[in-house]
Length: 506
Image (tube, rainbow, N blue to C red; front, side, top):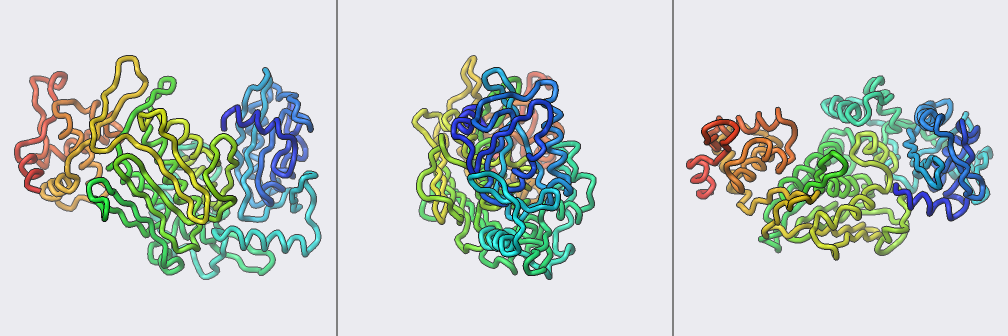
């Protein structure tokens, strides 16, 4: 979240979605009562280091990191917050003082703090003790958040076992000491809120969110027969498509497949922030793809779509709207449509924080699309729509300019089917994932022959030196590329004559 947004929150005064608390040297005693209440109601913002009127009192510099650490650790402690919901506090300096901002989503579960249920009103936090009030709270969650629907007959063996080591690696790379890493697979699902008990009906079991994230394909299709994601390229053939990806699998694999589809068909540019070079395509479209998956209303039969045109990408997904019309980037408030799914994607590092997608896309789109007038559109309704401008696909991309922080990646104007066909004809039994990587590298070499591995690594963004060396060796072994030059320092990679003939033939 930007510092301007935090200042905006401080200017609005306390209410049902905003709470200020003094916190000079330690956590306020009742902070988790407010966290619990906001999770149970509409979510909101807690700012530590301000009095009841929004006047900044500050957090002591020497205690800042310990307070943030305590927030994270206690949010994962069921004695303090049950079910646990890991928080991600952020600190800012305003008027020379540190403040801590905690963004709280609306949860699809009912939470307790110290075994007490709290709810939220304009007057603050209050205990929920009457049985009918507790029942109303559970009912509101059940009817509004369908991701929390319990399926009693689903068992652990219905999940894909190969996804768990993948998930653990992603969590570890995002946060090496994440508390989930010490749990068994079944404990991880419970701690993530993917198994729950409905205390009004007595039902308990895995939720729809668990099934969408980890379920085997036949289980997902049995429970949601209408579920599909349709990714299309409509550049040459605008009536039908030039390429298509049809997805009916779990959200973990779906995210990877959609990301690879975007990498295959969309140009890239690189942005230097500090000492790090970042892919603008990755920054923008990982957020867009996560938005399609995380904020979709899965009980609605409308398919999610991701369509690439020559100057834009348009997406649609079924939605449980909180309003209607074009979102105002400056003033919108993020509202999770599937809090459990959103939380899980945050833990994987695929989403930075709630609302980050809209803000990151808006921040980087002008550099990516190359036109100051280009703005993304996010339209809230029962079908949520996005329109994301891109560089003209199929046209010439300008190269990097001296002194600029923007470096344009390679866009190949070749025939995707021809290159895929050349790979199929030369390499037996190649997987679809590996073929996409090989095709991407082969296109880059076709576009600009004679370069060395580091250049193609930067242009394609395919991974580490080791990954690039493996892919290059596969293309060399298949006689699709060759190295020409007197030495490794002066030579480069070229397509073989046979490869050129195969591509032209296809």
